[in-house]
Image (cartoon, rainbow, N blue to C red; front, side, top):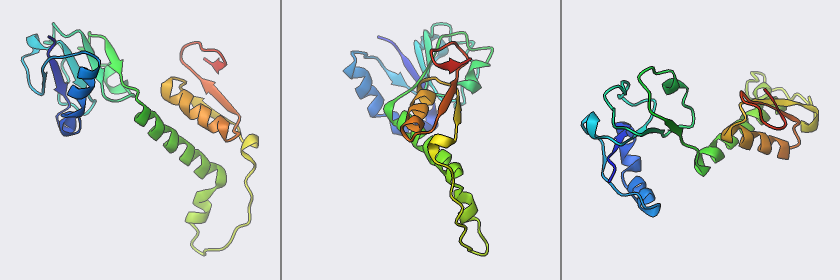
Length: 171
């Protein structure tokens, strides 16, 4: 029975009920704790805002599971020698797609020109159609690919870049 350290105290209320249920659904049982001796911890559920910054004493730990898709803050941590898993879930993906599409349309349509308009003068400038405005997505992982697909659905010509070689991407 694995011991799981939930090392993101500020997020614990949000996960306190849902995480044990989700683990039970996939047949994983074991204590989920917010404090434990490092030598007793099998898995760490982590967020970059966590006070846990030194992974050295966690010699029994098999993996660190990040609650955030972006793992940039932790991958450079020299004490992290355990495998790192990043979270990608439907809600996170949907939220990122909405944010990226919203801001892409904001810039494409020139919304700021209308919002920040001290004289409130009408400016009949028409933006080009989406198909005439190329967009680049830098990072074609799970989130970037979903954003690129949504932008393509709006007829933006999308070029993707990936650090690793992927079909149809620059790298």
